Length: 395
Length: 137
Image (tube, rainbow over all chains, first blue to last red; front, top):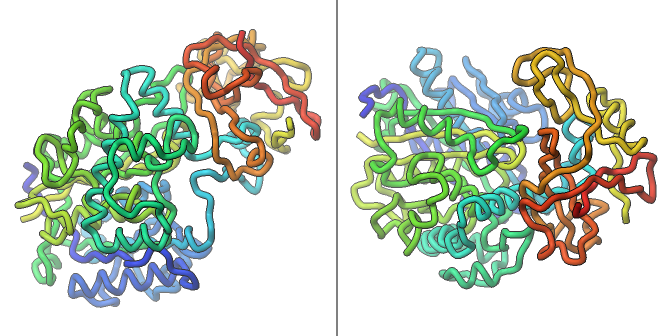
């Protein structure tokens, strides 16, 4: 294992509500930053690195540092959709190792549910025509249909089945039911059934875009969070146990003539991260993989090397992704985007729950957890997307 | 329907493609130096950066690489439609495009991955540009 300990997650906070009308996105960000700094035992004035996906209220990174009142020495406004926060963590490690930053802050806030944003079923309008929009707008593709096309091709090419995909929804719901904030989320968002589900529940839920069923699609919620990443010197004096970043990988992938849609950017970012971390997929205790849809997790389990391409179905069967089962890493132990929290860009929650697990604070705690992986996916899997992989270790 | 969103201009990459569609031609680009097929339309060959591209006309014959039938849509112009398909079509000349398979009774059961399809330029209720869609070949 990589023994370099340059940067650690020192403070975390997840906004507890999934329905928060009247609260603005930047207010959620500010509250989460304050609580994450408090969690680390650090001060507002300690922040010298700002990492932001420009999700606040206009003005991107400029508006955020102004509103917060930070005077950062490094400003990184990488925006690669839901994977932005894994990219930010990778960049924070790089900047801290280079001596440019001591206390880096990542934050996210969104009121997608209260604003009734049709993330999955709406179109992709652009104010001005682009080289892409003119080729795509006439066909009414939705974000869900984009991922659905990947699932269809995966089923065609490898013989994967709806039952196999449903295992992913079942495992994340099992974890969600143990997480009071996820239970409240599903209650406040008026889920038909706030309880454990089985494979037949998933298969009997209505089709949103063939072959994706409702219970294979993430929720649309409000929410947010913040992560504080610090240098090893700062990490010596924080309140909680440090969670070290030991490997990172970044990649993009896009539609290409003749390309394989069933392989994602994770096939590049994963080996980079595992190589730097000096660990193998079978050593990972917790896999926090962006569950926008079941197909996202399936493809990424394969691409990250947990199993071979096309074989996720065997790998996940019999509930092996549950935190109290063996044979596979525990998947999305907070309940995931499917059953706990998805305000549009879920990447930050992957880091939050991975850190909770390595501190021993999860509601579905894996005993003696040592290594966690967070893989964020941003954009649209079948057209243009980004993948960021972060590998985390406790002391 | 059909009343699909029209392409909008100025947009320099796709303008020749859509002028071709008006004449019933499905156009794509080829790098004259390397033979690489370039699609979506672009200024350069994304494999090399080379800019010696020319337009060619496709036969319009291809194969369904994958598809989805959208049952729930909030896209303006589509939300009232009922189930409609979106699909990636691999054209015989080697380019992949997003489109829709039409002309089947039941999109959920009648469209198959691997099925052969032929382009059709679907006239729209409004707008001067017909939209390239595909029918079973």
